[in-house]
Length: 257
Image 1 (cartoon, rainbow, N blue to C red):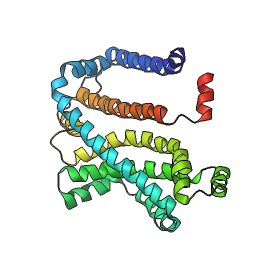
Image 2 (cartoon, one colour; image 1 turned 180 degrees about the vertical axis):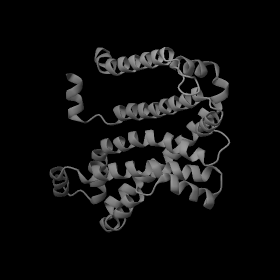
Image 3 (cartoon, rainbow, N blue to C red; image 1 turned 135 degrees about the vertical axis):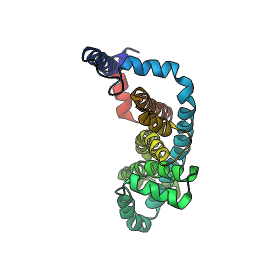
Image 4 (tube, rainbow, N blue to C red; image 1 turned 60 degrees about the vertical axis):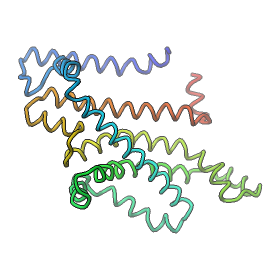
């Protein structure tokens, strides 16, 4: 508990100080609410305006979760296929890198033209956002497997399938979770971007309506909700990593300190 307070204390203090400075600056300089609302106004809207955004928050959470799940499964499966088939990796890996240079804001309207305004183009957008970090991180994890251990298993007569299941997959798990953490943040962002293209509910819709009505407090509230949802996903993945990956000696050494 003391270690957690020591590590989490400074960021919390900085956040609290920033909010106090923000509140004081708005009050001292009499900044109009439509230009820059005070944190207290945003908090008040978050408490009393729950019914206005609860459905939008739930819609974005559902959309980002399913897109995140599909993107991560696709990324991990692609990484395994590229690792097990060297020819496939040499042929497709450059295109995997090139695909990330295509601006999402340009690709998203094309998906709407091809697949309509339903859920499918939104899921595809989130999947594309989450796919790349997981695929690249997991593939790097496979590549960095200890050559000494691999040589030992080959000398012991292990097959390629056994080496992959018992050595390479466990070694790649920390790298996989690194990609999952990055994609956890990207998934909510991808969901909001997809909702801007045409949706009936979601934080992207809530943000657009608030912006049109000059309700800047609601715009900031939607931003904070996006950050909160991303942190929830990130925290869940971090918790799952601690429960799953228990053989990293450097982490155990840090905990002892």
